[in-house]
Image (tube, rainbow, N blue to C red; front, side, top):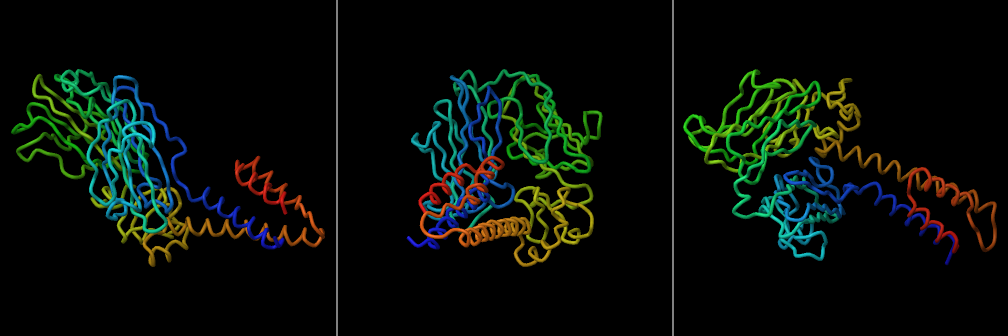
Length: 401
């Protein structure tokens, strides 16, 4: 084989591996063990931004013997195609891809809720090389095996602290019934300089005319001594609005139950927003609109705040000013940053390899050219950056040149 052709093959292999390492956003940790009533929130790569092409991710949730995994998708937007042959999510009743499939899903319809038959559930997400959508957000909960005794939950609630920029949490014992005669407290905190918005994705509280039996109360602060935003239950126009917003970075939520007629409680999705920026329901529910700038951390800001010398995103992504032009033309500045960085890095790698090749082609002649400098560089990369596969592949090819 001609030396130039061999070297072109080497570059192709290195670039293919480099693309795979850079582009894949699947979570590195795929196994999650849950104790009783412990929950785990997971999502498609890059959520709440659009997932990348050619992803192949698995999420395994397990629990101890006698318990089951309850799985619920909260948001779901995956490229639709009849038969789901392109992008799709598949749920398996067990820990392996060889276990029984519970369903193959795509499109925008939220899949049904699942309860595993044993102690494990495996979720597989696959995207092809073309159109990408927003993906999914889901929660898994370890629950006792469903029977007549576990449907009425006797779990005692404790004060719960929730923090972060975005996530899900549930009432104690969800999806089973909460316990009678309880006052469960949930304190939600977000970073300084932000406000909180919550959205009840599931709300099932005993109905009453004025919520004087069971109810959920939301306070604008750290405790029930702070201003009451609302008191909610099912029926009689007492259900919570689609979005509840704090004035600062704290919300206090209480679930109060009496001695009878308990129900399944709630599942809440919460998100944060920088103070002073407007909040739209679509932003909380589906990410940034096309008329807004999408920060790399998932926040949404107005277009007039980009490239103004102020870090409005709090990750400085609104101050990479070349994004403004890209946003106007494509509506996805975050993707533009990724593509720009990837192309730049790829060009540097290719140019460096070509320069090394040209240098040592002049200093070596005849058969058996070994390119010692190339092997040295790849060996250094293996030690410093962990690309062992790239090193092994390159040595195998160059040793045969």
